[in-house]
Length: 219
Image (cartoon, rainbow, N blue to C red; front, side, top):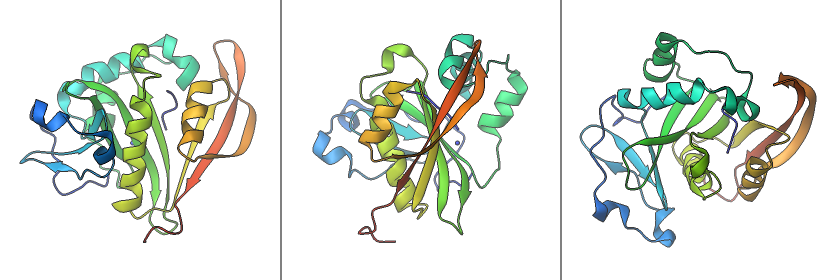
């Protein structure tokens, strides 16, 4: 799954290590998972899906985040490769105070290790809109429903907690798996930026997509 584009925080968010997931917490039926509320502890808030949780990014996640950024192989799905700087990555992920951005770590139940992230950016309260993006770091985790489950949780968070009504994203035209996932979640194509980026010796088209909140939902 590709394209990154994540603050505004819930009151329970903290930059601390989350408690390990307990087996009892992880066993939940698919029917209940989507409606299951955030699970609060003393240090963090985690939102449970069918097979994943989303929650705060913590200091111990930084090693994997840096590794994913420092990967020329990932550039064909995510952008031009540039060697990252550790301090700038640390500031970006752990010290951002931008009220227009929210970052979620994705964790595959029951593992406490970060498996990817969701970014919600350019949050505009007046227009009730934002940009959203998702990344799963390991190729073996893609195509297994983790990205869809994570993005569904993030969309629900945007509707119910941020009171947004429109989410937009950009995705490379050759990233067919991501396009299928976004379409399955209701995103619609709004346009194409022809030859918008030069990646690994090729000009890449970018597809613009957006999802609007169901007018039948309150808010």
